[in-house]
Length: 130
Image (tube, rainbow, N blue to C red; front, side, top):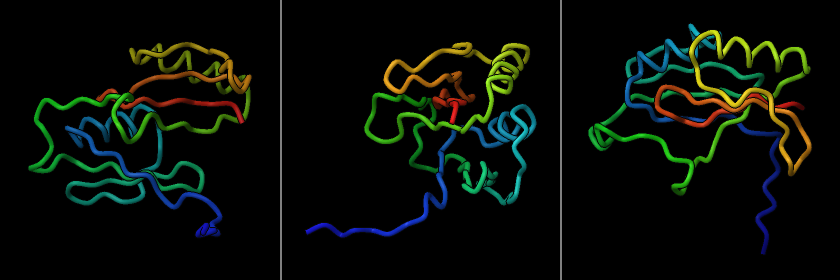
């Protein structure tokens, strides 16, 4: 029997990182998201109406751990892009900031443009056309 959950969307996403200060610099200072909560071991920024929490390492976090989209769990996080101009601007700005990215590509499955890049822990991110 189906549970039939009724929801209006995702409340938040939480990502575990190895160095919270380095991640804060990337997401807040470099990408420019607004920090809405900052507490020891956690900061939260908003992406549209969705909160993204960045959690620092715990005692269970392997010291040399790196993200892999091939493990069970998160494959990637994708932010909505509203215009071709903004997509091109962000791709160029990532490049200008020394952040590896794919440049503007077309997703063959959905036929939408995007640019893929990675955060300092190599968590896969996308800026994806609506």
